[in-house]
Length: 420
Image 1 (cartoon, one colour):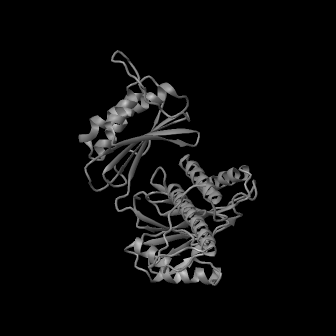
Image 2 (tube, one colour):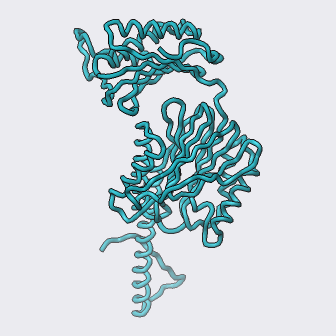
Image 3 (cartoon, rainbow, N blue to C red):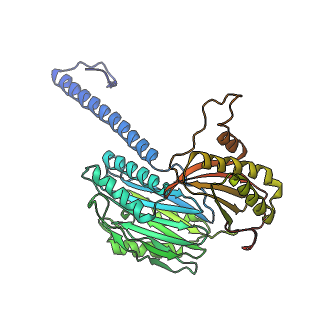
């Protein structure tokens, strides 16, 4: 019922249309019009699928202390070119990081939608401070509760970037690949549970492993190692050989090499690589238990001042003491239970953290009148900090602040008090 285009057919000489030609050209014009509509609909559908996929995957990966992470995603070359493969790198507290890769069954907008929900849920559970097996268990119950016909596989790794300790949890997913510093590569033997969304009470055991600096960890989906002409075992063996032969100095090039050529793919592909380098300057830490006494803030300030002198940070003392005073006061006034003050020095950053027993995050006042006697604490912390925030921890929360300090060698392990 509307014009979608124009088709011009011309002759060198004047031409009189016969009824048969009119019928043929009219039918041809109808077919061309339908083809144009289908092409425009396909373009719009493809653009929607691409936008959906890009919006659900991370735009960029965070910079990691003591390591480099890179990721690659290639859509399937059939259907909507959108699927359920996903990856994520989640910075956690205390120098830890979570690496996640997963695959939702199917290649459709529904699979991509479930993928986005699962990625968001796993990130939320991880940031809350749950251990890896609990994170995966919560995600499994969530997917079961969605009452969808789709299931998902997942591999979750939590890594302590300071110590090199790693905890692996698999839910029906391929095992990780590990390249050791000497160049040898193996398919990591890890315990596993069923895919997510199958059994609400499924168990997901953890496997622990220590990583040495120079180790490369590869998490991948089955689209990279399995196809109609490639058996899974052969594909995993080939990936191990490629990983062993690549240069670890450029993780991005390693990922591109593992992806191989641009042949036709029946399944989408996700690849997450991390080279663990270890921290060159290891953080030093000190902690103080804040007793609920009238002079508790004074004792916290004295502890902080002693620690800063031991760490040769006396020039930053005024700023740090102000932040400590405000954060400890807020914890004592607005929460119940134990309060702990933690200081950590890593390279050019000093982190001040106060942990209390209340899960409620601190809120900045919307309006602070000049006559107000309270409500300025969080505003002062925000103004004096390079970064600050609040993260849930088991049984409460941790409010933290970071300030920039001059780069220097980390103090020795005996520098400053460790506990109070």
